[in-house]
Length: 255
Image 1: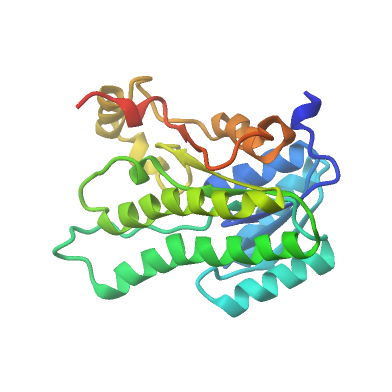
Image 2: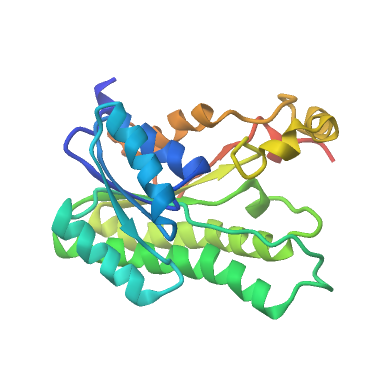
């Protein structure tokens, strides 16, 4: 189990105010990392920080808009000042706009691509530069999606962004491996979060999953903790450019 120990490590998690981001923060803190929680909603970050601290963890909160280069620069500077150069980045901030491609507005398209793709790039670039300047190895974990590997209706902007994140992850892995920076991606399937819990309380949604997901159910947030720790820790020391699906087999379901 020492392979998964993160004592003395600093982990920056974007989109840490709720859902998967909150789970990522609790998981890394539980393994010993000091966590830097970053997002636009300060009040949500404080809720996550309180949960981490209640379990004996160390957390600080920083405001971050991943679509704003100045905000990204300020966040990294504050992270280094208050916690140190990150050892781990979980690049989790993201949004979705449900609309058919004939209907989606330019503003909504830009919002999804700016957050889910440009934001992932800018934050990873800033963290990588801080690691390189400090001659410090690290692990960057981009949060992709099974929708970066398969398709669905009415989510074209999200699919375009997440599929680009899959390829961007591999490009980062090639370029930054020389600096001992590993770059991998998690591709989650359907997980219950505060955003979708009402949707999955509906019987029809659960029936859809029963038919389409080989394991026949939605994921529970703690079930993504192990894959995250694998990529964040020494347990995944020979992994870079990997896309790890955590989806109950959804991505390989039959057509």
